[in-house]
Length: 512
Image (cartoon, rainbow, N blue to C red; front, side, top):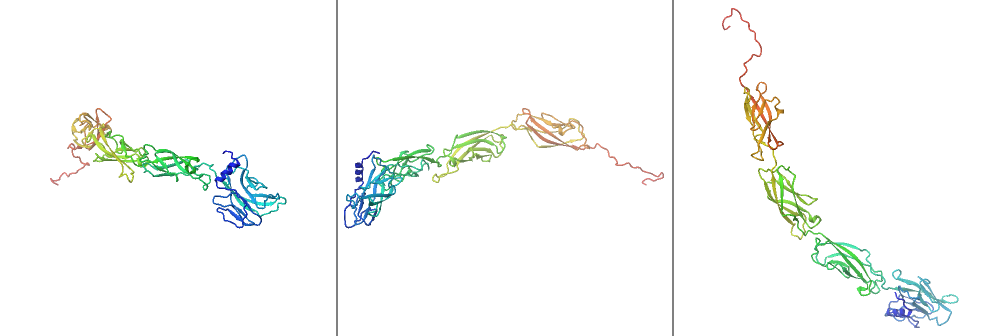
């Protein structure tokens, strides 16, 4: 701050409409606009400087003190103490037997009075933001005896504000969010700056807000500091975050005002404004016909540029699966569609499927006209699995006479390879079911023959297991039960169960 002379300061006070008050004898009290305190006591009049605009010269009726406020400019740092005002009494006619004394807040430390002239000086630089006013008491006493010549009177010295404090954003930096695609004028947030200067006197604390960085996307109301959307169609998928710099300037924003800035980080929140989109229009999967029910046969994926719940989709099969062979579920972790089997596949019955699958957003915006969707085609090719041979019947019932000769053909079992009509099949008897090796089987044609004589009276039934295997893959085995019933023939004479002994009389007659 420049070093001001007392003469310069006096000029400044004149510009503030402060005038020096002198003692004018009068016979009545005149009301004064803005007068802070008026008392009437015994003694002569003492008057002080400090009238504002519209005030007349302070006067008193006989025996009265009439006071107004005094003002001192804050932050004054001239080489000499600053003159605040001057006290004067009509008892002071040049005699040396009176003196002025000062008491109250800051008396003797901040403010000093010239005992002879009544001049009051500020001894220190004052800060209105620390203390805005001081209440003091003035009195005229006898210079020799300190006897009061007039009663004490109270007055106020106000510290006049200057613009020495810039605006400050106490709560900054700020963070705010607003939905993407919001309309122009949509409020985002409101910032607040404070100024420690006097909000009543002048424009030192009158703030005006402006935006330094963040255009053309945002604007700020110069008075309320409300930040608003300024650009139509702000898309989160194009840009999610913006840094806005806001300035608050005092003095009503005019030149010479002090300023402060803060930042506001604005994040666009997501709305469901993007549909799911399959990464491919055609998916092709090869699924073996022996895939177990419930197992995955393939995966599809619809991507969504939105985030969170707005990006989630559910999958469904809308065409091509009339028999309900397939189902598609949503993996909640990866947001993929998992194609699974609901019924077994059979290469020999149907070798391919063409499915139409759909991805549908779970959430939809109220104004969006329904959920977003996308479709894709899924082609499934059924892969032939190497299946074991299949017997013509699961169980065979054969009959043979017990007296049939060795190598008699009892019957024939047949099996085929479902994978190929030309694939050869070999037949065997599971010897665990024919420990006596009673029967043989032709490995090529499945004819079962008698290997040992039969006896119905020993075993009426023989149950054996026949296996069929592929020539090219011995691991593919099928089994069938063959029940052989032994038929009875009349090969045994009757026998009495016990021996009988008869006695005859020698002279017996016929028929007796």
